[in-house]
Length: 493
Image (cartoon, rainbow, N blue to C red; front, side, top):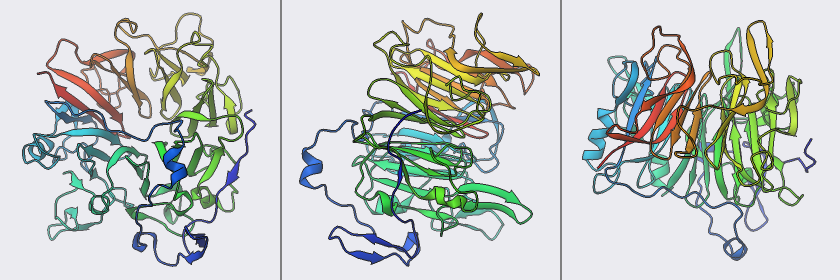
């Protein structure tokens, strides 16, 4: 187990006091969305210190620009951004987004999109000028804007009257000149990072369901948060990355600290949250302090599990482990504190490569190495990965459980065309190679794989090509949500 200092930071939203820049205390009695906030300038120390992890930076602008494609079995609330409610078994280009490109809504010279995040039943995208656009379900404010029922019963944006299935800009972010670079989407929680490392969060974490209905909380004193807000305990921190599990966030600072926020009943926060007060998990928690010999350089999350990679190339993990998805070899159902994953350490990968991205679904995890190899662990029952000959797995009751990562076999040689991005949903995966090839595999679940299958719930164990190397499009980014997938594709010149 990792020996680091673990501490909770401050008091969360509501009537508690927070310390301002002058060391004084100001009461926070207003609702989070009503409190004014202005970006704080960097002090001399912050400007001069070298950063372990870089500030978020947008990718280079390419022409033709990146366009939005979506597929999946459920588009009722419009999470594909296609302007309609039709499901799609194959990737379908969003004509709505194409029109926004033509109208110059994403920037000059036919600017397009640069980032995408598919959540539970909603989605986020970022355009070339750093605006965040949202679409889909808005039950608990996950779109970052308010919506109302129109006269004919259709839910629309309260300012523009545009239906939920059409992308609308999150005005609160644009009005404060927040230039978004990175976005993250969980079941109903959303987050964005700016090019200055500033964090905004909105929506809510799902906690439980009982006879009274579902319980969502954004903080101990706020049920749902419909507008992007800063988190008081984290003001002054600069973040390099943010990732989302189903109902929690993992944050990486430029100095190598790791924070968690959200629901913690499965150990995904890296500490035990009292059962009597589960919403204490919505108070930011520092899992890793960079002053104690470990500094993180990458983070990851699956539905109920969290990860970070340290400077030495070791992978640390905590959270739900019922199917071995932590990759530690442990048989414990929950790992409450960071443990080291096996077979994906720098020395396990040959001494040069390190893990650079970690994603996962309901019961499995994928690890992407810097040399383009992909590894997997957890449950392989639904084709999340193929069990290679000789792999150590406990086969019981027709469930494949692999508690230590094993290689994922691709149809091509990853040395020639390495994988550069991975994504995962509950029981399926996606991957993009350097040459722009898009693969999917796992459980189709009515159309999640975006390819032809014999039956809607077919299983594909070996990665299957969705965007071909020989085709007219290049895959640039992919994200897998609850019942839909999104990809950003660039047409070949």
